[in-house]
Picture 1 (cartoon, rainbow, N blue to C red):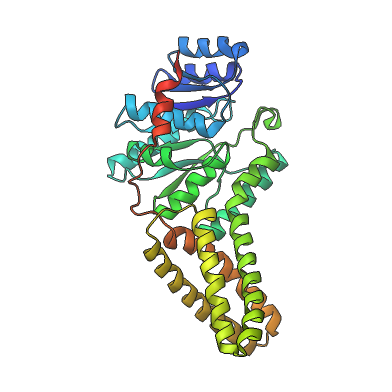
Picture 2: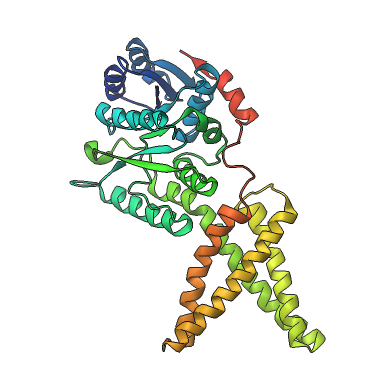
Length: 360
C-alpha cells in the first residue's frame, strides 16, 4: 500500500505526516513546483523515508495526482494507493481507516471501488467549506443519483486496477477530484465512504482551493449543458416561425424545427459538453430514444399535474426542470458514455510526465 501526498508550498506538517506513516506504508510525495524556498521541507520528508517527485513549475493538484498515479503504475504495479493532503487535515489514523477499507474490499474480492474518507462537518467548520461541500453534493446527486456525504475530501483510496482510469479522467486542479466522482458514476465504478474526523487548522487558511474559480470549473459542464439547451430552444422557436411562414403547414414546421434543434443540440452536447468520441450512429440512436422518452414523460407528467389541479404553466416549468436534470444525467451516463467501464489507458502525455519529472 502506498500513500500519495501532493504538496504545494508545504510546512513542517508534511514532514510530520510522512514520519507517522513511513513505518507502516510506503510514501510518495509530489512537489508541485513549490520552488527553492521549500526544498528543505521536501528534503526532510525524503529523510523520513518518502520518495519525492518534483514538478519544475506549479501545475495544480490534478497534475500532481496524475504524476503520482503514473509513477505508481510504472514503478509499483499492482499496488493500491491512498491519497492524502499535506496540510495536516488528514490524520494518520484516518489514512489508516481508508487503507484498511481498501484491504478489506480486496480480501472480499471487491477490489473495484473508490474509497472516500468522508468528513461529517461537525463542530467549527469554515462557512465556505460547509456550503461548498453541500452545493457540490446536491449537484452530484442531481445529475448522477450518487448521494455522498463529502464530495470534496482529498483523502481517497484507489485499488491498483483503477489507477489507469484515474490517469485518463479529464479535469484541472480541484475540479479533477469532483470529475473523478462524476466519471465513476458514469462508468458504474462503486464509491464507498469511510467516516473520518473533520479537521480544519487555522480555519483552512493553508488551502489552495479558490472558491469562485474552482467552483466555476466544477460547474462548467452543467453550465455548458444549460447553454446548449437554451440554444436548442431558440433554434426551435426561430425555425418554427420561419418554416411555418415558408410552407404554410404547422406539421411541417413543428417537425422540421424539432429535427433542426435536436440535431444541433446533439452535435453541441457530443463535442462541447461531454467531449465524446464514441460512434456517432449509436449515440444518435440513443439520443433519439431519450428524446422520445422525455416527450412521453413530459406529456404524462403535465397531464397528471393539471388533472390534480396544478395550473398549466407551473406544471410545465416544474416538469421541464426535472426532465432537464434527468436528461443531463442520462446523456452523461448512457448516450455519450465511452465504451467499456474501466478500460481507459494512461495518455501519452501522462506517461511522459512520469519520466520527465525530477526524482529526488
